[in-house]
Length: 324
Length: 295
Image (cartoon, rainbow over all chains, first blue to last red; front, side, top):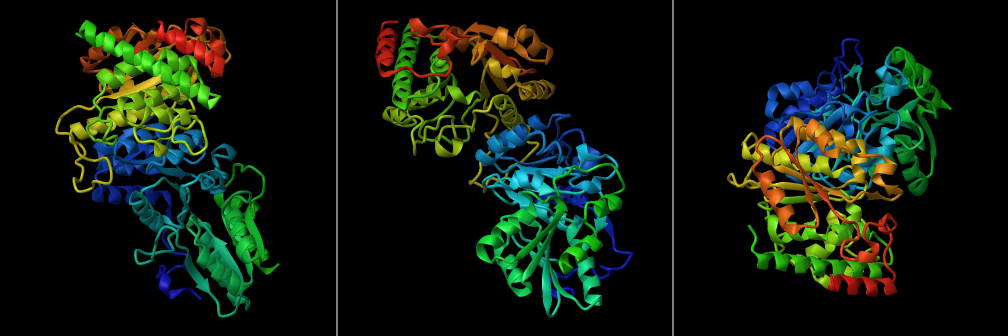
């Protein structure tokens, strides 16, 4: 059953559940953060509308900085601004930032340890028709390997807002991952969010599998758990928005209780969230870990739901992996 | 205008710094020789005349900022910081050694006095531009900072302008990021920014004009809406005069193309690109010190 402490949306399984892209949370979150902290600035690389940086620009034109199509410059200008006391958020598509400007991020933001918040939009295959060049599937791996980098993939637009606000209050560098497509808003303003904390969405009385998911995949995992329950199979769904630092306690508790783990992410299975979970469990509590994600392939054009099904990231694929 | 006496003092400082560079490189057994020697006069001019700074308060909010983009010439930065009083000159002998604050390429978190971490080329100009833009936002009071937050660099300096200097190599003009930054600084008319290119014409694989030509470098920056000056980078008063002119330019960032002689001060290696990335041996070091003292 749904975890009542998570204070999830009431109509969570209804067709009428509100759908918004997580990038909306970047727009609302940066405005909220900027109202609270005059040091917050937003830098954008010619993608103001689609990253929702435009929402911020309308509210705070003097704190919006347009860089043009120059992601390497965006990262390094932000590093300089952070060194001068600002809290810069940099917004582009994840393919370009951190895809294009990885070394700039490594040297001038991570090693230099300045509070730049890197916001990668349009992550995952659910970008859809734009195809493989624009479907970032390697960013979690790239970012979580950097010492001192916090990595967050919010589950919905509401959580994304909270994550952006929390990131602004964090001293170090943060990578935030957002999606293009509208996805169910399953959390509410009451749902707890804290960087580094996982959230149990669902817990059956006798769980035989723990489904650990990040980003919008957590909603799909929840739907799979509900379908399982209907056929008499108990499960846990643990939503893990913060991939680094990982909530090791919550993951160990879920793995101990269920004895078996499935991870779900819109990312390569190599190096991503599932890898982080497998690394933890192999050292602390070795159990079977099945990782769902894209397996050593690039994406392609198509409708988002079509692509998610093709790459094994739909309810059926999760149920199949969880019942093996 | 500097008096002859002041000029002599600065030139003598530059010699001391060159000696420390040689000593630290010999002790390290690796590192870059030509660039640091060539830039010793400019570093001297900056830290002993141009920059507003306080070695006892490296993070003093009112200081001018110096961003070293080509981090590999850090032996000259370390030697200058030491002679300026940031730390003991003796510490320069720990250059590149395990546990040292003087890393092979400068790391901000390890050593007070550094504005950034650098080494990978082409990344300093944009950081300097970001700092200059932030200062202007402060000075225009577009952003009103909370004064209670002392943990960060926050306080507005009450109209006292802090200038930002960026030192670059000439070869890093081959990096795309440099031109993204040049475009950005030109667009934003960052008059508080003075960039300096060490135009010594050498890079690892040979002369810049053979490896990947940069000329006409001044025209390129002018086309990016910069004010451009060209000076002899081994002439301390001329370099200081150029930085003074830059302060008077209100609508544009300024680029100073400083022509320097790589290996300057050690006649036997002056202008030789083979000395870009290697240190002198102990024996060579002794010879080089002799030449520096008699320059």
